[in-house]
Length: 162
Image (tube, rainbow, N blue to C red; front, top):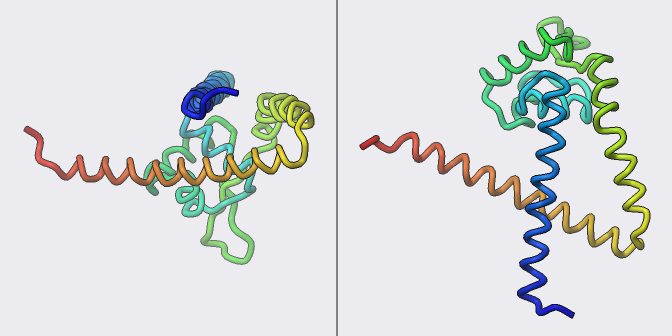
């Protein structure tokens, strides 16, 4: 058995490598789709959550209203989303991924998901629970750190430049 400090370091290194590999997949997806990373994040949200109004989409993506509108405009021009009137309120607009988006995202991420499920099937129920708990905790950590870094950026912007 490895010493705890060595094992902690190896796990931290493996996490960093996993995050880098995920970024490589997403970068390849942006090239295939002809969009940027922000737009890919928006498509991912619409794909996983379904139609959203612009405010909810902005909040989920962590974007300002202006950045969200610009992203929706780009995605609409590319044929990946459409704006629809919300049921019951003709003034409200929802954003929805188009069938082309679903087809292309399935072509990209479907094989990743299926291969991942095959690999996960090797683990016992208790190991899967550990992985689940680790990933949920990791998600919370990343969201907290993103908020911390955004607040640092806001503080830096308010500091006088030398």
